[in-house]
Amino acid sequence: MDMNMSYGSDYRVIPVTSIGNGIGKEVLPDLYYYTIRIVNICLVGNPKTNDFVLIDAGMPESSDEIISVVEERFGANSRPKAIILTHGHFDHVGAIIELIKHWDVPVYAHELEMPFLTGKRSYPEPDSTVEGGMVAKMSPLFPIEPINLGDNVKALPPDGKVPHLPDFKWVHTPGHTPGHISLFRETDRALIVGDAFVTVKQEYLYKVLTQEQEISGPPRYLTTDWQAAKESVVKLEKLNPTVAITGHGLPLQGQLLTDSLRKLVDEFEQIAVPDHGKYVNKNIN
Image 1 (cartoon, rainbow, N blue to C red):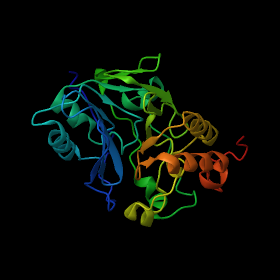
Image 2: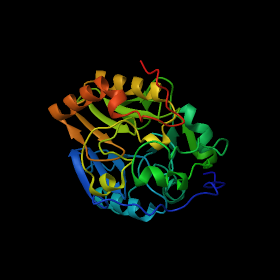
Image 3: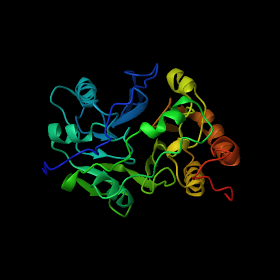
């Protein structure tokens, strides 16, 4: 293990939570999500086998809670085979260094996300000018400096295979970040979305707090390429998923998921894209 790891100098706890905080749910026998304040982590694997993978790493200073959730589901001293990151934003890697040190497991992310995870490149500044509520206005406080995981993070295989999850493939879904990925299993069409789309209007504090369910595009204040974001949603809708676990909000299933995704594709500019903002390109096709 490379112990030379660090968070950015702007790493901090963001004092926002939701009514879903601390609640977990088994969506399928081997698919479980748990809400850390405002963001979801996902555990993939049958708890009877102790063979599982963790998707994303929660909010800053949440490592003890994540370890407790893992051990409650898989048993004392259990650890995942790997950690897969949908992307490197602070609310998806907030406990990653502590988890690596505790479990000594590899981390995988898309090749285009690696500069943000190896100390080489900061994310673009959040756009607090997008229309939205208090969370959008708070976004300049969010950490954007790169974390450095050193040799502990590896690029996902280019063939779409997911280490330790042979039934899943990773799907490149950029827009929210350059190397954002989602995970899809063909056998039951289960989808782990990350932030390619979400099921809560993440810009509005009231909706974040209450987890009012409605499909939306990626969080506006941190999305920098809206054309790519739309293409990613179109790509995911074509997979015809039967269940989707998103990075923020409650899972969607069945006909409600099908109808909601279709609506998001058809009305992406109206539902997802802000009317104004420094990353908004009005020439979205």
